[in-house]
Image (cartoon, rainbow, N blue to C red; front, top):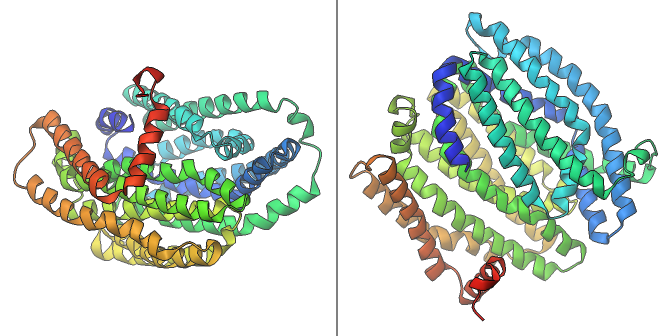
Amino acid sequence: MQLAIAIISTPLLLHWLGDDRFGAFRAANDWANYIGLLEFGVGGALSALVAKALGSGDRSQVRSILATGMRTYLQIFGVMIVASVILGWFIPDLVQIKPELRQELRVGYWIGCLGLIFVPLTPFQFLVSASQRSYLINLLLMVQSFLITGSTLLLAKLGLGIPGQYIGILIGAAVFQISLCWRELRAYPDLFSTILKRNPEVEKELWQLNIPTFLLKLSGQIALFTDNILIASNLGAAMVVPFFVTQRLAAIAQSQIQGVGNAAWASLAELYFHQELAKFNARLIELTRLVTIMAIALLVPIACYNPYFLSLWVGSSRYAGEAVNLLVVINAFLLGLLSLWGWVFSGTAKIGQIVPLTFISSSINLAASFGLTRSLGLPGPLVGTLIGFSISLCGLPILLKRNFDTPLRLLFGAVIKPLGFGIPYGGFLWWFSRTHTPWGWLGLGMEMIGASLGYGAIAWLLILEPEERDQWYGRIKQIMPQKFRKP
């Protein structure tokens, strides 16, 4: 669905906005993401506390945590508004936009700041996620995506430029937040009456966890939201466009891969809090294998066919090159693994254990990206990201072993075995894709789907053990309608 939306919307936005407006808007959004750091890690800390309270079945404790979180986010809201207004004044200088577009970008950015009014409602999202109902968030995010796409396209067509893009995002955010909160308030109807009642014990736990969570979020922000900023400031806002569109397919696949960890962290945390460590590690290794297989099946076809996709989609002139294409795919795979392993620590309130490693890797990432962007151009930030991810990839398994007694041989095996089949498969597919040009959209889609299913078949027959296949058979039967199940 995300792919279909991107295929339809991006060329139209580029046509109606132009590369300079589109690139400036993307870079300004990445600057705006840094405003989120002013929550000082409260979100991650609150998420861990909610998961722990739900695991114990203490409904009154859940209510108290939510009330404390909303009260804290009300204070954060005020700080964010002031910082956003100040940043908006300087945003045209930070993005390096054309003089005639400076005021348009500034006004649009300030319109986007109105979305901060929903910040105090943030704890409800943590409640839904910790309740193992991520499907609800995903459904509402899909609705939000449709609304944002439709609104931004309409407003771009009407000539509202950059401000129209921010208005479209504001519409989608409002529907998402209100829909999510409306459902949860029915489960806790007396929540607002408890907001003014302080709970010193919950506040103490919250602020004990927030500092390591803040440092982790800062590190993640550096790793994920600096690339467009570096490109815009060093190479110009228009160069953000090829850099962005070349990554688009891999970014969509990456969100699906990361969704495995996002959906599974609450169940892993529950196993840990119930002291079922053997089941915890077995599940973690299974998820690691699943993430690796899923990443190879999705990303290898993208690496091979992305140039043809971009040629049909936005024109070959906007392809950032083979180096960017390959680096994007490698980084997406590594981020999927690191995200899964990182959720283990944040979901079990052990987030402080990974902060030093993540901070070091992100600092090296930032320094390398800054220098390499000037020397290598578009591939520079991605090389810096790869260096940072490699450091985390070496350290996180050691921390898993130290904190959860995770068997490293089995953990590495869950990654190496799928790669052992995936690398030669990817090499063959690369050669095959370069020997001909796919026939239009239909031919391209069929070849990419066939390539993905081909590796899926290899994984099913040669990578998964017989007992794992039996488990998957059982899971598939559970989600099938009753009339299709075999007795």
